[in-house]
Image 1 (cartoon, rainbow, N blue to C red):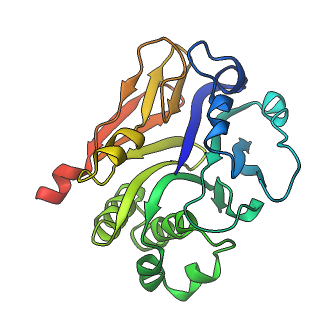
Image 2 (cartoon, helix red, strand yellow):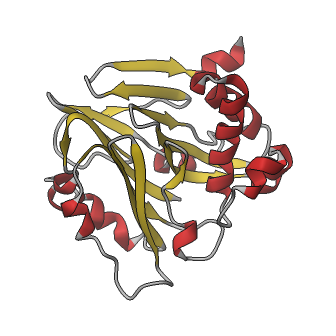
Amino acid sequence: MCRLLAKISKAKTSISYYFFDADKKPFKDFLSEHKDGWGIGWYSGKNPKIFKEGADDVGSYSFDRVKDIKSKIILCHLRKASEGANISKNSHPFVYQNWIFEHNGFVGKEYILRCLNDKYKNLLLGETDSEAYFMLIMQFYEETQDILKAIRKTIELVKKEEFKGLNFILSDGEKIYAYRDANVRNKEFYDYYSLNYLVKKKEIIFSSEPLTKENWNPLKLGELVVADENAVIMKYDLNEDEKK
């Protein structure tokens, strides 16, 4: 259970305002309930970069790094652990090839591990269900060479077992893929696993909760939003896919 923040823009910009100074609730203020680790991912050219820390690894977090990072795409994460020790390798985001991924929720890790082939099992560096969830998307992406098909196939599979929240933000360095879903049988899960986006003139911001007093757009359960640097947004209802 975590908090997600990301942005995509045409120019290289900072996410510092939303992290430290947003006029409703800055992202860092969620640290009081999400203090088990943190991380930031971005792109230098086409190369993904990540920096992350675990609560048990450091005396205090190096949030000042956020101020120094400028990129077209940035992902930030505050971790509230559901599985795995509070160490940096279990903090988000995770990276594989040109992909960066962060998750808010809980999925059945043992079930996912049974679905992963040896290649992707061996790529796991930490202990979390979130990293396994990411690797399953990557495994299906390798099989299909279509990220939308890979996401659909992953969601269909993980929802067959126990889950609380499936929210994620994923990037390939060109687009952001933001997905929201939760176990609707429990209202607490529905309210907590929110995901929103804010469309600005030069950027799109994604956040678990609205950070400013502006008009944020909530994602529906089962909705996948894809955004590019030109602020073009595509929406897909994966719940409708399930009904077909």
